[in-house]
Image 1 (cartoon, rainbow, N blue to C red):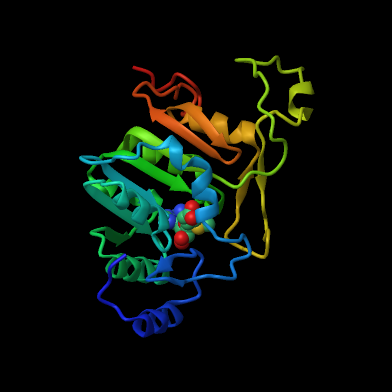
Image 2: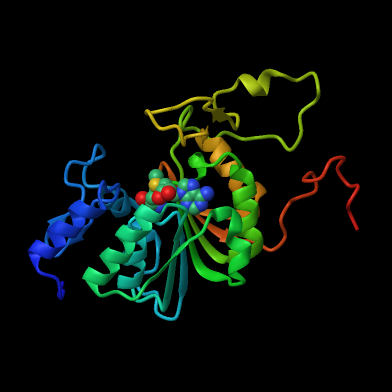
Amino acid sequence: MTTAFSPDEIRREITRLGPWFHNLDLGGISTAPDHFLGDFPSIKWRTFCNAIAPDLSGKSVLDIGCNAGFYSLEMKRRGATRVLGIDCDDSYLDQARFAAKVTELDIEFRKMSVYDVGALGEVFDVVLFLGVLYHLRHPLLALDLIHEHVARDLLVFQTMQRGSPAAGELAENYDFWDVEPFARPDYPKLHFIEHRYANDPTNWWIPNRACAEAMLRSAGFVIVSHPEIEVHICRYVADCPTDGAVYPAGRNAT
Ligand SMILES: C[S@@+](CC[C@H](N)C(=O)[O-])C[C@H]1O[C@@H](n2cnc3c(N)ncnc32)[C@H](O)[C@@H]1O
């Protein structure tokens, strides 16, 4: 990697902009060498990097909840024509902008919440929605908005999961008196965190695997691969099964 920054300048900026959640290699210097998850998110990326095309020339990418830009940088390194990273936290965006400068990669970073993606007025070939869902008080709304406004082809999705890693068969419908399915560990379950989990008050809803998959389908995405327990590669489908989105079902049907 060539960079106009000296090692001293990089070190100084890394310290000034810290603490970092992404361990980036900036000119040979690590931004978060003592990360509790190890070399994160490289360690995660390696498990699903082959599920995304190695050549993204001509493609546009939206990285939602980009943090310090690890995945935005990787998408640009694969030749994506346009990469936009959004996050609601200024300090992470400052880190991302510095990382892009050091690595001399042309990436736009913008302060924006996932709930506001409609304001972009733009659709993307690849949308990354990694490590954000469980930080949201309204996770299904976020998926619906991503589907409605920005995703048109590939959605790369990752969430923390807790509970059963199994995804069993689900019936289309259950009788009112049939309560057994809810006791099954592999029934879709979203665990609500009233106070904090892992000392983080921004964790709100943690799905089990079945729930993550059901939410993706319900928001209008088809799961095409599952390269790692927490990662789902999905395709956008135009016909979204929203017949129950408004109560009572069918009232707004045309
Ligand atoms: C656990 S980090 C994941 C970072 C990165 N996507 C990854 O997978 O390594 C969660 C990120 O989501 C951002 N975030 C939280 N709520 C958000 C929201 N409503 N809209 C956009 N970003 C959000 C946080 O600021 C943080 O940078």
